[in-house]
Length: 367
View 1 (tube, rainbow, N blue to C red):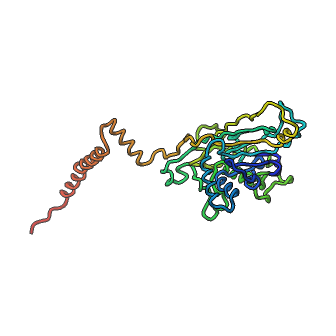
View 2: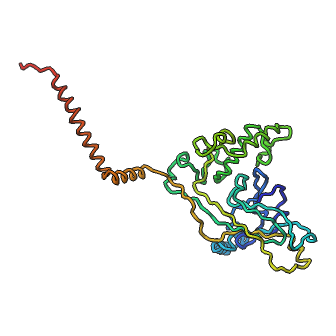
């Protein structure tokens, strides 16, 4: 949830629930810097253990039961994250037909990066509103024969790989690979090498590299035009000639071999009863808005499968099948033809050459 003007956690979150169980929003939402500002970041992979451990800190049996129940709610209305947001609207200014509030961006399955803002749902946090963001997962998988190939040949990275990382400097890279995060790091390095400093908030966790007002503001302005898009590699077809000469070049930022993309289906807020609430109820409703993010079904659609186009075995089978289909011959027949040609060459050239050489030798006189 990206905010240009960054509020405190308590000012933004009212309460949070994961799969129907409450948890501390400010304790488990992390803060992440992006190209456009800061965002609150929530790791759904660790949410089950986190919520159950927080609900039953001293009871292992109840914690195990909680994890089992969480597995039963892997899809449906209680499958995801429910957040209540403070809207901070004066109840005296709220009317039935004109509810005002704050705009919030929800980015799913990414690292809260500006380059990933194309997959998002936008909500208007109106007082007393109940919003639903339904997530439909679309998955890209990979075949097992890609594991043995180097990243340059397969054209993608696995989750535990990072371009330029070694066992010695691996700790300096993020734990999991993301093509979008790789592009942001590439942009950051380009600006740092060009201007010798970084504009906010590309500084991330290194405040020593921040550009002060006295440090080449014209360089930052010119650089912002370059980093507006990524320059395609020369070997990639389909781009205009001028697109190969402008922009940041990030040839090492390949896509992930296996990834999930979520199609966000925003739903309009539920209005509830049409009668106007009482003054006390209106004051309470005006202070929070519910945002519900959940999975409607248990299965993901596999849109793509990344696989090796042609291995050596596939090429042999393909050529053998074509030869058998159009020429009426197999690999065994082809091998027999090669042996036959070799025998003919031996008879016509090598054997005659041996006979001629033997005939040129001088005769040995008899004693």
